[in-house]
Image (cartoon, rainbow, N blue to C red):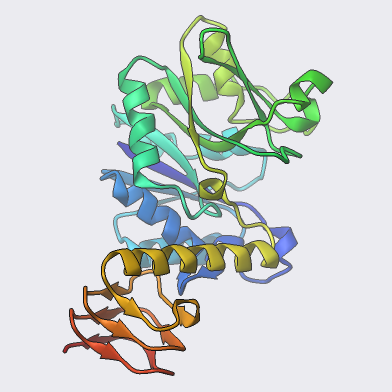
Length: 304
């Protein structure tokens, strides 16, 4: 499997000189979290599509994984156009391609593997969706009577009936490489935004009676970051998950809500973490070790 990560967006709502995908959650750029998702399914090729702040984004990607292929979207003409920039980098690739986003850090391995299984079971295109009580501006997944996916409709192009649908598009998509780029070549821009939507590949596939499928995950898993408030919420969600994971792995924490983990923190079982502890990058805590209150650790190995 190959993974293409779209990371060319301006991120104007962040109001920052730093590219959106380089803002940090748990001491790592959002982009690195997306790359970890790609690595979780043993991707043999990872392509990052850059745009705004492209040089910095490319450097960050290759600092984390030197084998990452960097391509550039010079004009922002939509998600299908962004993906098309990866065509040359995957011209000799024959497997499935998963499309992820640099500002969506929490897609799980199990979810991606479920998408790959759906591909194996005959779906030409597989889309990741989620249900929400506030569908708002999200694209809607229009399902058929047979349980298959018929179309994805952007909110600004949707009918009132379609806007009532609460099954929404995460943007994550999976298809065979040659199939995906063949469909991308046919995508047009006759829509309210004048952009080339990646979502149109579903309708194109269905127009030739090819089966498409939707895999459903939680709304939290598809959390995207578009503002400072989103960034804070994403960090809080990550910390909550890490605390639960530590407790389930038999780590004792005196005041879990005051312990803050890095994306790469490793803590062994029976370790004890007192209150008000911050883990910076590259910290390993061995089983049975004690971390005293008000510690801030970075780049270290703590033994018993």
